[in-house]
Length: 161
Ligand SMILES: [Zn+2]
Image: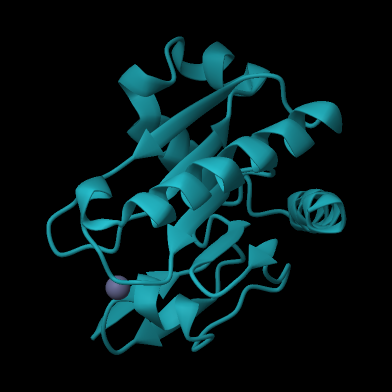
């Protein structure tokens, strides 16, 4: 059992692992899936209202990169690069920070974080201060304009996939 606040501010509860719950469509985001197949999903970050911040996640509940099969890893990198290329070619973002977080007892996922001007203005190095950026986003970016922008960007990537 756990709770999570979606990027919209809505609180949801999940029974087991949020990654598994999302893969089974037990909760959905208002902007929908960017991409989905048998083994992976790509979506707006569930919690953070940062436009263009996408999450690539395997459907299988694994904790580490090594737990994926070679085939899955190949597919994951193909999807990662394709997503970044679409964002770049659509002039949504030029540079990214890509983060794999292998947390204990957590469903592996990749953060595709666009490096925006406001982030470097706020903290300098994004990686050094990622928590500060996320707190700022939660406190300041839950606005109707941003929700619209999130929908716009996810639709663009969806269409081009
Ligand atoms: Zn899981």
